[in-house]
Length: 276
Image (cartoon, rainbow, N blue to C red):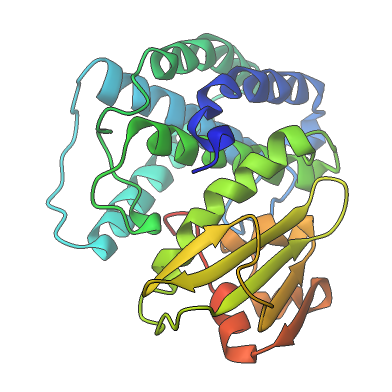
């Protein structure tokens, strides 16, 4: 596993500072800008991020279960979480941007302090289902939280055309965590030993990753074990939209290049690294 992934708790405060600086700079019009998340404007995404802080502090730090649900399947989980998200965002429509910022200033540091207090290798309260894990360590749960914080802040920045976190420091860890979904995505694809797939993200904050079959299992690595039979190249901006299902591969064709086996490439491009 990458040490950068297991250590992401130390990046959360910096990511939060980037968010607060961004929010304080937004005009009234920008708070109402439409994001790539079709149901949400900028203000709705900010409210959703706040929900994440409060929910984690209440449920995990304070052990308060205000609402429970019978969840028997992954689809049950998706429906439940989507309802929670929608209920919160709707309620926050009556709250001003100024109050949202104030609440982020209060809860963000508390959220970061809570996660920093955890043993990264202890069992997490929640598993990372999109990676196929029935049980996760705290480091992986925190890594999933990092991707949520990165994604929603980037949705805001994309909507108001403010760069800032599409950098090596913030974006590369996001990619590495998201790629943990690939083995689960390929779980029903026969793993013929030696099969190798290359994923490339060009540009200053990009890189190359290799996905290969070894001893009957699909694995992610930083070096090829054989010449890749399939190569997928996708821009950084298209990558975060694709893995969050903000856009589908068909919508991003101009930003994707495929060489080799088209079926394997299609499978790579079907990867989803968020509960949607």
